[in-house]
Amino acid sequence: MQLNTFGFISLGLIGGSIAMSIKNILPNSKIIAYARRQETLDTALAAGTIDKGVTVIDDSFYHCDIIFLCAPVAANNRLLEQLKPHISDKTIITDVGSVKGAIHQTVERLSLTKQFIGGHPMAGSEKTGFSNANPRLLENAYYILTPTKDVPEESVAAYRALIAQMGAITLVLDYQTHDYVTAAISHVPHLIAAALANLVHDHDTPEGTMKSIAAGGFKDITRIASSSPDMWEAICMANTENIVKLLDDYITSLQEIRNALHQKQSGYTFDLFTASKEYRDSFSNPARGPIKKVYACYVDIPDEAGTIAATATLLADAAISIKNIGIVHNRDFEEGVLQVEFYHQDALDKAVLLLQELHYAVYYRK
Picture 1 (cartoon, rainbow, N blue to C red):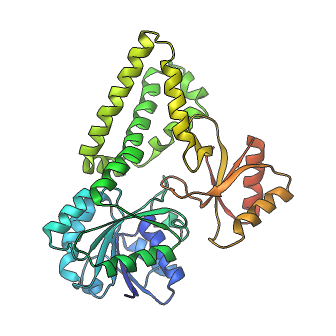
Picture 2: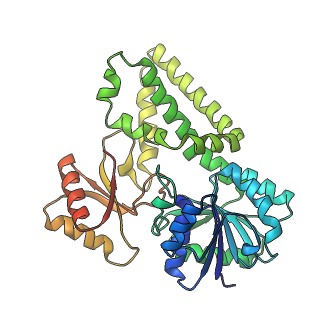
Picture 3: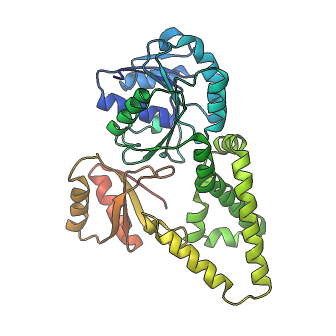
């Protein structure tokens, strides 16, 4: 099954990045996009990312082999209803949302289960919009698929092959498991980060002492609180049941910690920190712990043999010591493909300056 014609419903950061990637790997493909703003379409047309842009969903999408729903989670359900009369029964429909329950229910209600494969690329950043799209955003990132039970295996295989061509790593889950997993590793942490940031805000001194000295661990663990309020409000409303269940467990654990501290229970916190350290250190990228200060930058590089070594050699030739270097697979909040960690701030500053002078796209947190 060949995929040659692609449709995009909305063209923001993720949709734009996927469209750019497809144009890179399939230059002869045809891409049609819908967006509310003509300005977005004009920019995408000028960049050669799309071949046709429309501000109304119509029969322009009828001959698409696959259509990506790239609007916010809540809007995708409404847009899918508008799209249904304008697609053939051979078109694969997918989305890029971080919650899958609602869209799968809409697909069942619209009798589109033979055509739908849910998708969630684990890539992105705090930045939004087509202007921040990047054709390498998906390289080496996890891309979760949640196919319905009715969709043909041939369609799933074709979609997986496309994802592989874009350089992403496919993981197939049922949509219920997906929503529970993402609630635990993404949605609840966002709420915790927001609550912690507000806790310090509410208890700060009139002079803002806490804000002034906040650094290292606090900034790292609350960084995701800077994400889009509109987007995260929609996500929380779409995955409420899973989030509430996990929050209840988290609140219970905090209460147990509070009681142990109140009673000065010797050894409790030691065991707590030991267990959490062992588990956190077992992650594939342990250098990114949220407690210690991390001197790291993220670099866009092509997914080609030798590029990591070439980047490391440039830094070594400049006498800049590297502590750790590796590919970032879950890039929900990191823009770059390659993470480079250093021992000190000075080394990070020198590396960023050097790589930028050599026209690398470099991202880092101040």
